[in-house]
Amino acid sequence: MTKAAISPTYCKTALNKTGIPGYRYCLNPYVGCSHGCLYCYVDTVLRFSGRAGKWGEVVVAKVNFPEVLRRELRRKRAPLGRVIFGTVTDAYQPAEAEFGLTRSSLEVFAEERPDDALRRQSALPGLFLPAR
Image: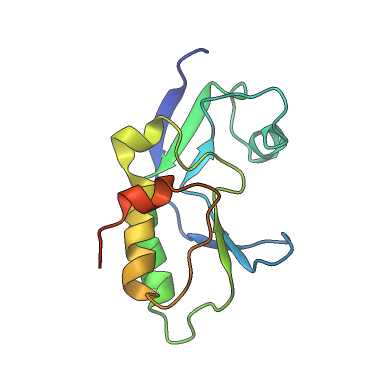
């Protein structure tokens, strides 16, 4: 596996509507993925996002993602509906060790929406959240 070039950027939104059945919004704190799995469908996202680079070699970290998420969740008309993390990126890819955007976003979500359930496929996200 080649080492991905990681570049920071700023985002305007964190919650994005999704067409994934059972969910209303998705959260993707990164664009691209350093794994570059051959079977992954997400490489088309990078191609159509206007970003140059080969799939698996480019990762963009949305450095203000947790702050933008908090602002969106605090709006008077806060978005309602189920939220899914990492639909077009691996939220726990190696860049997470440097930027901590997924962990920070989960903490924001837990603080702002403590009654909402967090659905996950592994126990890993629970390791990043402080005990209540």
